[in-house]
Image 1 (cartoon, rainbow, N blue to C red):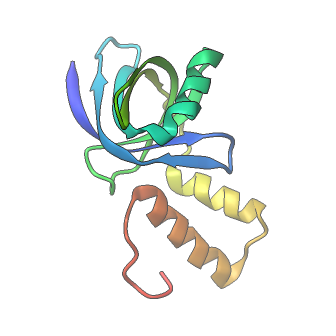
Image 2: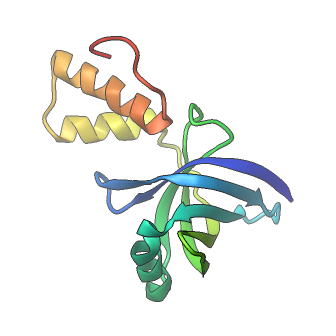
Length: 146
């Protein structure tokens, strides 16, 4: 098994809506079982308790994007289930089982397809594409206008 720092995590509610989770800390462990299974542990603020309790009670897989090691890395797509929630005074720990989903569509293609579907064109499309790509990769924009 190999352990990595969990740099960022987002829950994908559908193709357009995603919820970024503010991590205090997190680890992601590759089980190296030839089935692309991972173990994900996050240390979070209790404000996420309702969300993860609901996901745990549903006992169904949900989609995630996880970024390993550095926020500038491209996120990986996973299907996950909540294994356990440990409540503490002001924080909580969430343990999840994840399955790495390898698809041929990369992050840039997903972002571009969503923007085209929204009807963006020309300079507006380019500007929003760069903005969303940087946002999803956790890169702070320092150039005015992206």
